[in-house]
Image 1 (cartoon, rainbow, N blue to C red):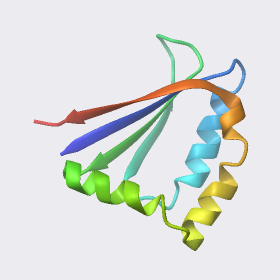
Image 2: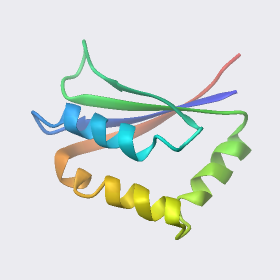
Image 3: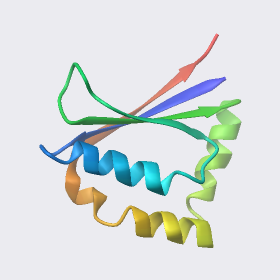
Image 4: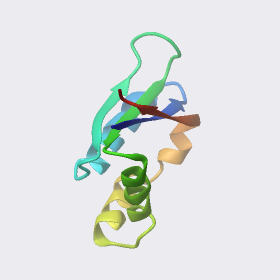
Length: 97
């Protein structure tokens, strides 16, 4: 199993807004299992946790975000403006043993 953490360091005051946007936009995705905000560590951090059976499944899932489907149009609409609310981000991919 593969667990992916997409991490966003938001501008002050925007972490909860970004988390709510992600929760709304990703509600139809079976891959996204959690949206989290920090309680300790680096401030203003939002982590989106996704789970996949394999790296191949992760790659296939990322391909669907490149397609111009109705689902992707709705997701893009729900996420409008989020780029202005964060400073930087990163991705961590873990293999579960």
